[in-house]
Image 1 (cartoon, rainbow, N blue to C red):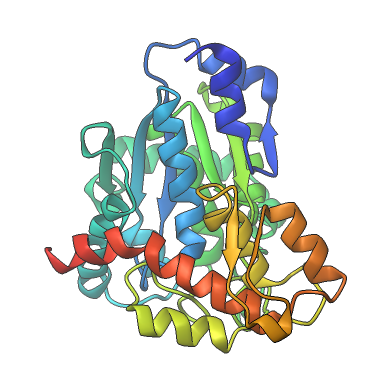
Image 2 (tube, rainbow, N blue to C red):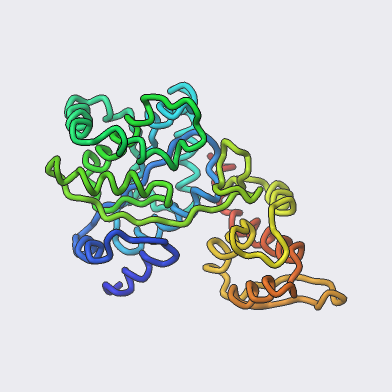
Amino acid sequence: MDTESRINLITRDVLEVVTPEELREVIRKDEPVVYTGYEPSGRVHLGHAITVRKLRELQEAGFRVKILLADYHAYLNGKGSLESIREMADYNRECFLALGLSPERTEFILGSSFQTEPEYTDLVYRLALITTLVRARRSMAQITREARDHKVAEVIYPLMQVIDMAYLDVDVALGGMEQRKIHMLARENLPRLGFNAPVCIHTPLLHGMDGSEKMSSSKGNFIAVDDSPDEIREKVRKAYCPMGEAEGNPVVEILRYFISPLHPEITIRRPEKFGGDLEAGYDEIIKLYTSGELHPLDLKNAVSEYLVEILKPVREYMEGV
């Protein structure tokens, strides 16, 4: 794969690369490393699958993947006991492999396996000396914005995440846009500690099935990657999908990010009295939907059936675990 093809693959459907020039330098390495971290605090859902898809594409472009199963981060975020979080980490690992990551080129790292080492702790302390309280709090604002009684753990969390990037020796940090402030903190302060600033790639956030800002296991507004066909159909049927509105519409987002990349032509089954079957690409479907010519129920039915089929390999993999 030539350089331009690799760049196009890496940047497809991402919201931001900081910076594109640095990314071009990174991909010249023999096997650059991309990292992302997940709190193992709930079921793996489509919101996670967006970043996993990008990790697969980065593997195609020559990257080695390091996934941090961030048990201590989840603990600091009040997601349960370390024992229960580590059990969830095992489930998360299998889901990520089921989504198609290469086992040979993916390294899963439990945060607690290195986050108590003296060298790591020393780096956290050194970072704390050059990071203001306001800056640390701002880095966590997006992730903990609903909290009323803020904990000291909230400012420890971003410092640890920054040092994770240095300690794991990563070239690229991947995450949703809610990670941007922490990524920028890393780019600002890691050079001051003698480390290279990582290139940062930000993927879209998937809206919750109830139309809320973010799909979240804690809110129950998600489709899990190992949901049964009936669960998928029911969740899509009940999903927020306002007539004629594509922006902020989770059903449209599923169509865009999960179905259309695999199916350039999408078939929507409809009774003859409502126009009959429709076969069109994503752009044409959105045009018909926003003009009111395509009913939300017809869109939902099509999306649910495609999604059931797309997630079939995940269900089969998880059944064998």
